[in-house]
Each structure stands twice: as C-alpha cells, then as structure tokens.
Image 1 (cartoon, rainbow, N blue to C red):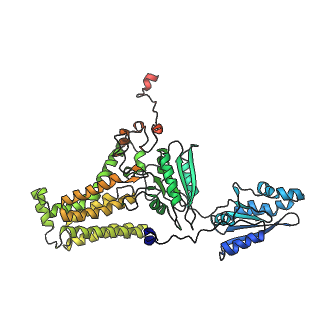
Image 2: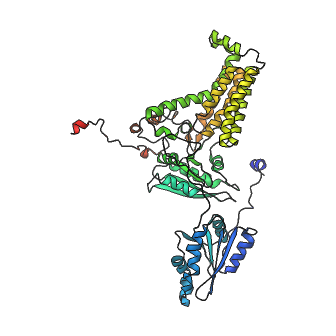
Image 3: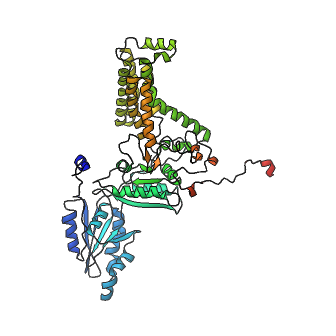
Length: 527
C-alpha cells in the first residue's frame, strides 16, 4: 500500500456500477431496476401503461417524486401515450420497424429526448430528475427531459454587494447559472462543456470559456484535473476548488470564486475559464491571481478616478490587516525609540497597570474579535449584527476598565478588524487573518526583524505560487513582457485605455478594444 493510501485510506470503489445492458423484456428491466438499483427507494414512482387500441403494447415510466416536473410528465408524456397512442394500430411490418419511432416523434411532446442502452445510465438519469420510458420488446431506454425540482430565484449576492451594478446573483441550479452567464455573452464562440464528478453523487459540472480567447494549455490542464477527480461525492464548488488547485498546502486561494454572473462573464471575456458546479451558488474562475482577489465588480461600474482611489485604499487596508497588531507589539516591546517621546509617554501611561506583555494583550483582543466574528456569522442576521457591535463595545470597554488591555490596543485591533472587511474576496481575507497571527508571533520574538523575515518568506512563497501555470503575482511580476497589464491593478485606467486582455490571453487576442471616437466634440462646430 502506497504512502497516500496509508494516509488517506483506500479509495471507495464499491460505488462504481458496471454497465448493465437493457433487455427487450419490460418485466426484466423493471425487475433489475427495482431489485438491484432502486431497492427500498419509496420516493421512486413507477407507472405501468398499455398502448394501442387493444392495449397490446406494454410500457412503463419511472421518475423520482419531487425531482421531476409532474405537470410535464402527466400532460406531455402520459396523456399523449395513454390517449393519442391508443389510435396507433400499425401493420405488423410497421410494428416491427417503426412503432417506437412513432411514439418518440409523434406522441411525446417535450423539447429534449434521448436514448440510452444501459440500465445504469437510465438510473443515473432518473436520479438526476429525468423520466425514463421503458417499452416492451424494445432494447433501448427512452429518457424524457423532465427536471423540475424547487429552485431559488436569483437574488442579490450577499458576499459581493455593490451600490451600482447588476443585482442578480447565481443560485444552486446549474442550468440557471449557465443561463445567467450566457445572457451576458451573446457569442457563438462561448462553449459549455459538461462533466460529472463524484463516484456516488455524479455532480454536474459545466466549464464555460470563449473558444477563440481561452488559453488552450490551461483548458487542457483543467480537463485533465477534472477527469482525475476520484472521490465519492462533490457537494459544493469549494470541494472542486481544493481538488484542482496547484498547491493545496498553500494558505492562499489559487482559484477565484464569485456569486455574480457579471464577474464570471467578464472573466470569460478576458480569456479565463468559469467552472459552474451544480448545487452551489459560487462559480469558480481559473486561472486566478492575487490582483483579481483585490478587485470588486463595482470598480468597473464607477468612474475610473473613484475606482482607483478605492483600490488604493483597499491595498492600504490589506497592509493594516496584515501588519498593524504586529507593528504595535514590535514597537512597544523592542523599538520604543522609534516613536516620538510625547507619544511614548502617553502610550506608557495608558498601559500602566496592565499585567500582561504586549503579545498577550494583542492575543487576548485578536482572539476575542475572531470569536465575535464567528459567532455573529452563525446567529440570525439581525441578532448577529447586534451581538457583534454590542459585544465588541462592551468587551473592549470592560477589558480596558479592568486593566487587562490598554485602550490603544483596543483601537489597533478594531481598525485591523475593519480593514480586513475591506478585502473583497472572503477566502483571501481569511488567509490574511491567519497570516496576521504568524507575523504577530514573529514580532513578539524578534521585533521588526521578525516582521521583515516572515514578510520575505510570504513574498518568496507568492513568487513561486502559480494558478494553472499563471504566476500568482501577475501582472506585478510579468509587466516586463507587457506593461499594459498594469492598467488594471492598484489603479484602474479609463475604459478607452484598457484595450488589452491580461497576460493569460493568447497574443493574437490581446487587443479587446478599437476606440475610433474623435478626441473632442463641439456641437457648435457641427452646426
């Protein structure tokens, strides 16, 4: 047994079903389905019917109660088969060759119809919400498209809210999500490739990309990684994300996720690939960079000057969220000579009577803030926000009055917590929060030298990190090849100036804008 099998256990191969060919006998097929595949499944609906004037031709439909659209099955399949098909009484030679074609082409009024030759394929379609039609003396199984489970309507995303921009968000239904993205890309070169991931769950996954813009090597690598997934079940896109990323041991997310269809569409226009996973409202985008994690959809819906200032503020908040508590500990413990005398005296006065060193003081407040943050997420919306605000104020004030921490420490931790919320990507913000503790301990041990050491280690790690072959720090380290990529980084250039796609796009598709406007327009000259 190999190392990885010892570590994670043997793979579950029991869920894989061998191909079972269907029979010409309706009774045999029903027996196999009921006893071997769907035994003790009381939510499976079986309906046996008879066709023809004399009822000589037997058939049966099978679907899952609650997953199939009953109205569609009743009105456009069963009604036609049981009433209209009774008038079919073909000659023997027609019966032998064409009865089933008559049923498929003239009696079942649905938009999508297909045939399968194995029972396990039929069972998979049943469990996916389709309706199966079995005909006696016919070796193939007809699949009627009838998916109709309850679905949430598109609503404004909670994690990516904007002041100006589209309000619709992705939902848990795969086909609705691909539709929301496709309505923004009316191009026949937009391709949608379907996969099924998970030995037991058979979760549907759709890969969306622009055929002439996408990097073919990235597309091939993604296809290879999706096909290599061998796990029993996929319940959310987060599991796919972890299974396809380059370095799962890294703390930094290497796959971008979004709840917004406009963000996914924009990424596709730039040559990236969107991965839509059924049962998840989060679409994955590859390749991804740290620059993409710091961007918000609203950056492109406001004027470029406003968006640039907000982005600079966002990067400043990133530095605060990462270094503020560590700098407080390092300066107060190792380098008090770096601050003005008056400020040093005021700081010493505020810490008078505090029995703990600065690192313990910082840890008490940081851990308290993290507990409040986690608790407020788990509570109902109105109660959670109230508890978070009131709890933070009460605990902070009580800690200062009790002499456990100094007031300046409370201010530093509060500003740090607020700054972390300014990072648009939630999973990137969590990574920053975790790294803050590593830098904090290093500052407590070595002061500013410890902060510099850990910062260099993080930077070295980021320089070597890639997302599907694309450097994670692009375009900050790839601008030598194409400086135009810097137009959409810490500042956002005006739309007419952003005429190139990012470094991921093929060279022949770099240009995305041909601005033919005149520089000035004077209405008096036109008259």
